[in-house]
Image 1: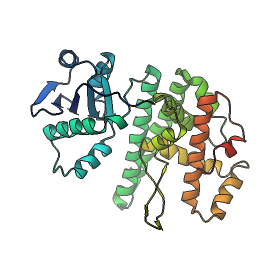
Image 2: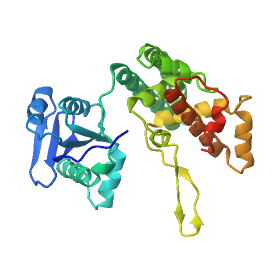
Image 3: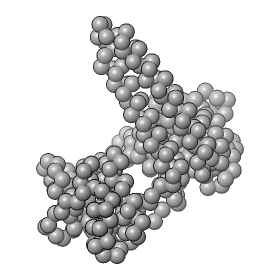
Length: 320
């Protein structure tokens, strides 16, 4: 997946539901534009060819501008908000507001464009599946939060349990819609192939298929980094610190891969691999994370080869 090319100008765009706030790098002026097709189209036509627009993923409010800009041939980068938040802390920005956030994004793009990946509009099938998966993630968070906050209140316990059962039924219904959307999308063959991995069911395969086809991943390591399952070193001098995963990327993708690892660890094929990891001294959670990472590697290999899972892929996946 190639990086952006050297931009002719860099614009930081803070996205809001009703309007966007824009700042060009090297300029003090900050503009506000209505977040509507007509206003955005008129503004985009004024920008120089090869310009770069840097924005955050803000619910779905950034999608209109990103789609219009990409269609016009401009370069677009959509950042994970956590990345820009850490950048703001690093340069000492205090507080959060539309105008300074737009300047921050412009500065980030101007300094870091060589490392940034261009945003590409998703296909119709990928976009639909992504929205369904995002809604599932919200329902799961709501179910967990409800159980944690109200289950200890005796007077509300029965009502809490009733509400959780209703949420669970919604999640199960949504799971059916997700699988149906994956089977109807352009990557339906990949969805079927991914289910050949021992431990991966239709739902996990749908999440993997959506992630694998959203971007043109050139390297397996790039995809693993996207899952957030890549280990982060904590070394200094001769000290070798404990590795922890970065947890970047979609939390639901990481969660479902972990569930797939739990399922796989109980099978005849994967159980010896899991036991070997535990014998090396890894805790149960650590061993399952390694299995989840191996499953992600195998899924990437299947997406590149177009061939179903073969047990020899376990060796090809490496130590992960």
